[in-house]
Every structure is written in C-alpha cells, then in structure tokens.
Image 1 (spheres, protein in one colour):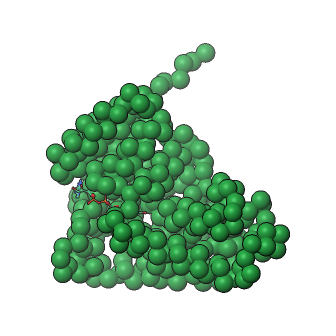
Image 2 (cartoon, helix red, strand yellow):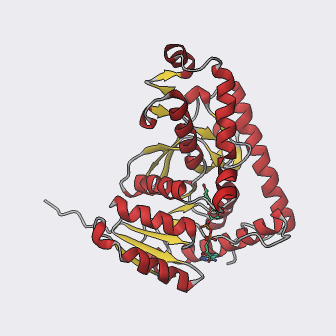
Length: 329
Ligand code: NAD
C-alpha cells in the first residue's frame, strides 16, 4: 500500500495585533494546526506575541508557533490577513480605506509572488471590500480568496436567538447575510430550531408575546453589537478569533462546512462582481460551493441592497485610486 505523504498543517497570520494574536491563541488550543506563523510589520510585536504564546505550549496540543517572513507563504494551507491601519485623528473613512487597500495589495502581491498554494482568508475591515481587492489583485480562482464575512455576525445572531428562545446555541441555525456592516440582514427563511422555521417553532415555545417585534430587536442588537464592544473596550477580538478557528478548521480538515464567508459573486443571486456573504460550503480549496436559493423576495432585495452599498464603496475607491486591484507586473 502506498503511504500517504504527511502534510504539515501550517497557518500564517499576517497582522499580530489584537485579532491576529487572539486567533493564534484560540488556534493553538484547538489542536487543528501543526504550525502557526505570525508576521507583522512591527517585528517586535510579532516576536513578543510568539514568546507569550509559546510559553503556554505545555498546556495545549502539540503545535509550533514562531514569527516568520514571506517565505512562509510557500507551504501554508491558510493565510489569514488581519493586518490593518488604524484611523488617524481627523482622517476620512475613504482615506483610511485607501491606506488599508494599499496594505492588502502589498500583502497579496507578496503571497502571489511566493507561489503560495494557500487559501487566503481576509479579516481586516472593511472585510468585503478588502476581500474584493485581494481577489482581484491575486488573479486567483475566487474559491481561494475569501473573507470572514458575516461568520461572526451569524454567531452573534445565534447567540441572541438562543438567549431569547432559551435553546442550546448549537441547536439554533441562523445566518446573517450580505455586507459585514450596517446593510447586513437576517435570513429568517433559513433560520430554524429543531428543524422548524421560526413561524412554526414560536407557537410551540410561546415565550414571547409578539415574535415579529422581537425579530427586529434581535437583528438590530446584532448590528449594534460591535459598536457597543468597541465603545466598552476599544476593539473586538475574542469572538472573531474563534470564528476564524471555525473557518480555518474547515479548510485544514476539508470539513465542507456551511459558513457565511464573503466571496465574489458571479451571477449567483443575480449579482456579479461584488464580495458579500451568502451560505457557502468551505473545505480544503476554500469555497467549494455557493449555496443558492431559499431566500424570500424580501431577503433577496436586502441582499441586492447590500450589494449596492458595497459596489458604491468600491466605485468610490476606484475613482480616488485607479490603480486599485491592478497588479504591478
Ligand atoms: P491591531 O491594530 O491590533 O492589529 C493590526 C496589526 O496589523 C498591527 O499589529 C499592525 O502592525 C499590523 N500591520 C499593519 N500593516 C501591516 C502590513 N503591511 N504587514 C503586516 N502587518 C501589518 O488591529 P486588530 O484589532 O487586530 O484588528 C485588525 C483588523 O481586523 C482591523 O481591520 C479590524 O477592523 C478587523 N476586524 C475584523 C473583524 C471581522 O469580523 N471581519 C472583527 C474584528 C476586527
């Protein structure tokens, strides 16, 4: 019998700040990766995070953690980009976006230059626009360049529904779709508990008087949750760290998990040339299938509204910087 070649499960994290390091911490505990490499333009920060994380190695499944460089892209299975610039006092949203777009283009050029076989997972915000830029810039198949999209928002949604309904979060199936941002919406048509759509489940449960009113409250709470956390503690990183373990785990183990990652659409849901989140099957090669259908006409309208918001942002960016997405040859 031919022995299968052992393949190291290597994850490179670009950006060793709050999100990158929290993801590394959660990934180390998960036992899903053999090697975790941290890269940051602030080398001392990357080194410091690596030392701190490595001192916990006796307490987690075997994994190697080290700082790295661009050569590490060549044999990575997943490259997770959390690098980003912070808003300067008085800086416009567009200027910040232009700076983050330039950072993304540089990183993607380097990854492509190293002939990396990895799936790129973009996390930096605005995640849908930066995923679009990363995808166009790379020239790679769209399946290989994905954004964390609304995986985090969907988990916030499931949490709030589980709290409201008093049901184990693992038995609440629910998705937030569209932009990772204000135009995102709840796909109620795809939401179920015990295999039942909520219109059927709610009369059995009978926990609230006016379920329709509760629906809006829950979705608004999801939309506002990041603002609240940032107001309370300056940044969000724990839940996104765990969401990234879920996404990267699906890639490393070829799990073919249904996840609401951000991807460039090419006619699905009647939309083209825009990155946003819809349910997709995620495995070793990134997105293996975009699951189309199941949305009500109201939800389809919300999806196309979200696409318009994102397309306008990309158009605005392209007007201000016409080199966006064009690779230097
Ligand atoms: P942070 O400032 O703590 O970390 C960002 C890191 O990126 C810094 O350490 C910085 O040195 C590094 N960096 C900047 N340019 C770089 C480059 N060219 N190469 C390598 N490293 C570079 O920020 P954070 O709190 O970790 O957030 C990171 C990003 O993740 C932000 O854009 C944030 O908005 C986003 N985020 C996304 C989600 C989501 O659901 N998609 C959730 C939370 C945060």
